[in-house]
Length: 207
Image (tube, rainbow, N blue to C red; front, side, top):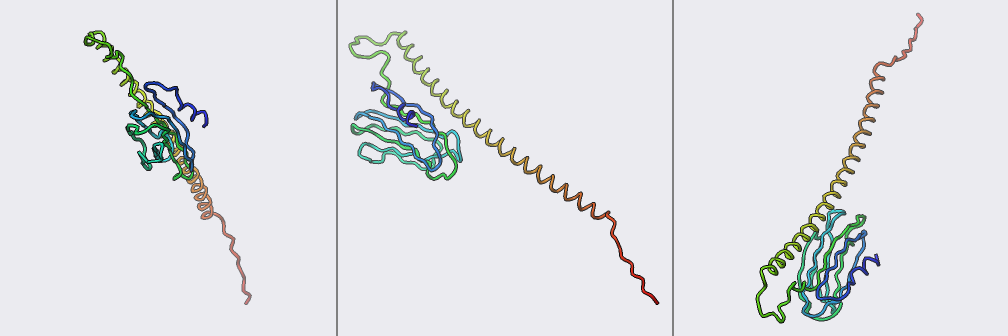
């Protein structure tokens, strides 16, 4: 778990994103920390992939401990905010309400915005047709990456539900087979008792 926490601390830059999938045991709470500069726009997006009812508690706090976002038993959600001050922001995922079901949680925490491909500084002319095409392709590729991520999450969630359903059906089939076996054996013994010879005792009374 410590390795996953360290993955969140990426080198500083104009914009970066932390994308992690981690296991959240039952009765457990997992927190992550990020240093954010004032005025930076951030987006937190999360989704529960496997486990129980696919829900989790999420809480986001600023450096002073003020709650910026809090939701209970959410399957997925997205929250965007602008940092009001410099410092370390904390967001936590809690599965403390679950007694025996662990969860698999995915989150994507984006800090800042991507810089433009062609900075407008020191430019005296508008973007050329080639540059405009590059910008459009870049934005389209970003959308494709986002769609691929969501489709992968949906596929993982669907696979988990299918495996869970398959396990339930297998247990139900075994239970039905055992019940059928017990009923069959009971019927055999019941029918056998109908056709078994009953010994009768005859008593002769003398005159």
